[in-house]
Amino acid sequence: MSDQLVIAGRGFRSRLIVGTGKYRSFSEMKQAHEASGADMVTVAVRRVNLTDRTKESLLDYIDRSKIFILPNTAGCYSAEEAIRTARLGREVGLSEWVKLEVIGDEKTLFPDTAGLIEATKVLVREGFIVLPYTNDDLIAARRLVDAGAAAVMPLGAPIGSGMGIQNLANLRILRERITEVPLIVDAGVGTASDAAVAMELGADGVLMNTAIAGAQDAMLMAEAMRLAVESGRKAYLAGRIEKKLYATASSPLSGVVR
Image 1: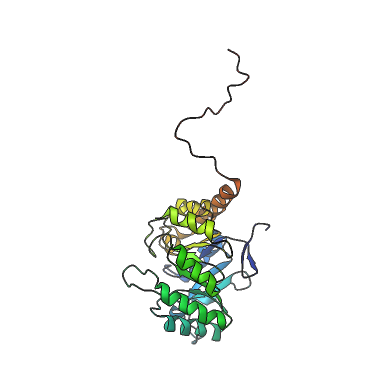
Image 2: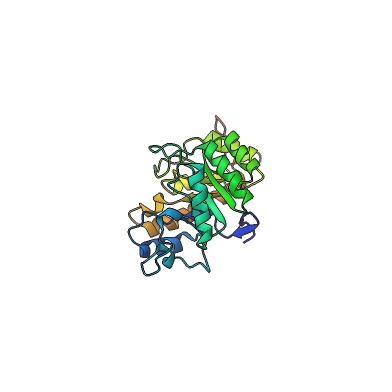
């Protein structure tokens, strides 16, 4: 509890944030959420039943007394579209928080940085807590922080690719230069070691969906991701040894009887 993830003054027990899409059933989703230990999950505003309460909704499988819902603007390709979607999520009672996505390319799903910054400025003025999904680019991250973002969420690799962290150097730079708000790696994680690497680089948290939902055993993968995030965080705080080109004896030579 003493090492909480704090965003906009709100503390979260877990540094793992998970999604709600691509599961084989809502029941499987619920079980995976429990196994992950996450207390924040993302929900795509445009892909959830928000109005017809006679139909089953994934929201029925989320215990909102234990899990905080982070609406996202997935599927939006312009600042205007993302802003409207965020407003809709707030109007129907999801949250004034938003994981902001403004996609610039349909094939790679890379963010439209200019649109993202524009939308962040508007939504912050309207009282939203904005967590933008962005490229692993320092200048873009700085512009988002200046625009009022409550966190910066750089990609590790393209969404859903499972390729893991592709640019370690950029994430190291972001960690060193972005200190005002949390840094949460979002997208590209494929397995537990990817999550551990992100945390060992100093990320404050990791957000994932496909890696868990698409696994053969979603619940087991969710548990593995929970442990990986926890161990990666501890390793970062502990401070790793320096990398050296040559060997160093594990046992000291002083005091050795010859």
